[in-house]
Structures are given as structure tokens and as C-alpha cells.
Length: 368
Image (cartoon, rainbow, N blue to C red; front, side, top):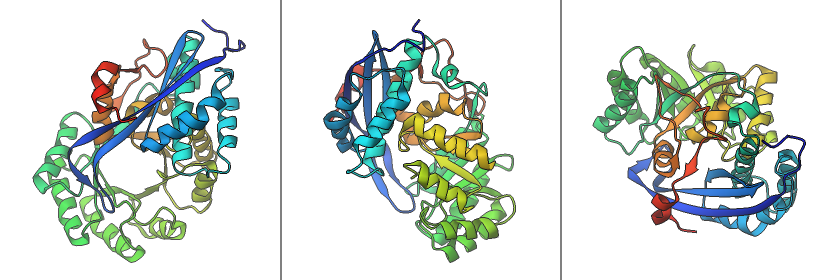
């Protein structure tokens, strides 16, 4: 077992990108897609290898290989903050949002996974565990789904014991009401129903829709307007029916973004994504902001990646069990944890995040 005071030099970093087709055409209120790209990173030091990943474009893999690799190799694997600071400094002239932060995310996650393996610990123990399991909500219900498929997917999660489900809206305001009604019929009265407009509505539309959604006991309205419209989010938060939380934050790439959103009082629940906000280091920064302001935190997508950090971040209330990413993580990783009675529980018998890439199985998806 490596003592935390020991310096362990990072010897190697490798990166790859894989493109996986969706199992059906998918869309939300503002976007359509038929595949997802995952970028994986391996970092080696002291005879151990840490795994990290992000959901991003192949250009993210190139940035890691061309720039970030040379930044972290030769540094101390135990001193993650030093590595993180160096990576952030190195992309100053490239811009922090977007692929730069996602590239840093993948490397940072791999570094934390590596540190836990060097210490012979599950990652949640390194962070400091505050809960045994992480509640999840089933997420999908794409606007491309016919009503029958929508109901089948949401009902399937409920039958697995998941008591919170989320669906996409925003393509057609009138059709959205019908779809939300159908969703409520499918899941029954005892299940929390969330909706996500992906910034498709104007302020006026969102206010009208919120009132109609309340008739079907919708308790979560995500990105009713653009997440850049902090005044609009605050308006929705002030005027939404009682019991309906306004949520946003998934496009936060740095601490300043999250601070501005919280300072504006724009959300009831802040969302953060460790595959976008510069990894676990950035996610922990967002969690501290939430803790200081008594605002709940929810993780966006990548359920396997957020499991350990979610069981260590005090303000966490739940994690998104996103259909695409849950499917990919089952295909890609040994040690992937299945939902149990509406929650994910870390396997404390496994080191780090507990994940191992199924390299032979996923080679066919490799694109970079």
C-alpha cells in the first residue's frame, strides 16, 4: 500500500475514443442524435493504472494526446490538485469551456481512480464516504419516442424499483402536455415525474407549461429556458407551482459558472457533470458551493462515473441514470453496478471506481 506522503511518478498516459450507435433514434427539445462518443484515458504510475472517461467528441481525445499527456507525465500521481492546476493553466489560450474542460475531466477522473488504486482503497473511501448508496432517477423518454415506447421505458424503471423518472419535452408544447399525461398514467401516482425541456421554451411558454405540468404532479422542471438566462430561470423558480423544483447546471465547465448560477438564485437544485466540469476535482468545487448555500446537488449523466463521488458529496440528492450512458457503461466496463431498489451502491471490494475496461469487447467501436 502506498502512503499518501510518497511521491509516485506518472509514467504513462494513453487515450482512445469510441463511437457507439444508439439503440433507436433519439432527440430532446433542441437536438437529435444517433450515436454517442466516449473518450477513455488510462494513467499509469507505481505499477497501477487508473481509468477515466468523458462523453465528448474525438477532438477531446486529440487534445489529451497532444497537450495534456505531456503536462501530467512526470508529475506526482498522489498530488492531483497540482496536476489539475497545471492542466488548467496549459489551456489558458484555448478557452476553458467545452472540449478543454471535458479533456481535463477524463484525465482528472483517471488520476483519482489511480490514486485510490495506489492506496488500495475504493475511491469513495478516498473522498470520504457520507452515504452507503446513491439514489437515482431513470432518465430518457426522448421526444423521438412514440407514446407506447415512452410509457414502456418509464414503467420499466418503476418496475425495477426506481421511484423517480425523467422524460424529454420541448419539441411541441401542445404534444408535451399529452406526453406528460401519458407518462403519469404509465407510472402511477406514487412515482416522482421529472421533465427536461433542454432550453426549448421561451419564458412565457415555460411558465404556462409549468402550470399545466403541475396537474400531473411534475416535481422537477429542468432547463425550462436557456441555462444562460439566469433571470429567466429565477423567474421560473419564483413563479412555478409549489413543489416544482427548477434545475440546471449541466453545461457548467468551471467554478465561476456554478457560482453565478447560485448567486442569481436561479435554481432549486444545481446539476453538475464530472465529465464536463474538469473532473472530480471540479465536481467537488461545485459541491462545496452548494453546501455553503444550502442548495441540493444532482449529478448529470454518466451514472457509473458519479457513483463514488455521489456517495461522498454531502449536498447530493440523486444521480441521473441516463439511458444512453447506462447502456454504454454496461457494454464497456466490468464492475458496473446495477440499480438496486432505486439506488446504486459502490462495491467496496473493488479498488478505485471499481471499473475495468472490456478492451476486447469494445475494440469494434474504436474511432481514435
